[in-house]
Image (cartoon, rainbow, N blue to C red; front, side, top):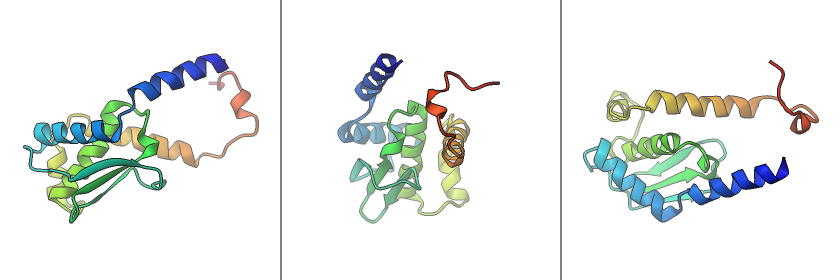
Length: 137
């Protein structure tokens, strides 16, 4: 089992975006969903965000994504990135903000995925759970 986990981890690390690719992805998402109006000065991964998925400082044009997103499905990372790009245009979470995200077809799916991850992180861990071959149904 350990060999399989190492192989999966190696696959994931190969497909994870670096900061430069993250910036390129932000530009593409802005063009596709925000008419190119959101232009971040910088986009990068950070390791100090454990209670939020991303953050944005509109005055600086900077976007930071939590390292916890690395390895999640592309549509989830794209949603969080698009969410932060929208904050470059609208600072709060009012109606105007959510209107900007309506054009992204996987908004609800990505939000559900993130809610599921957050809920799973709050579940108590059982001793020896890592050794269980599969959960009982």
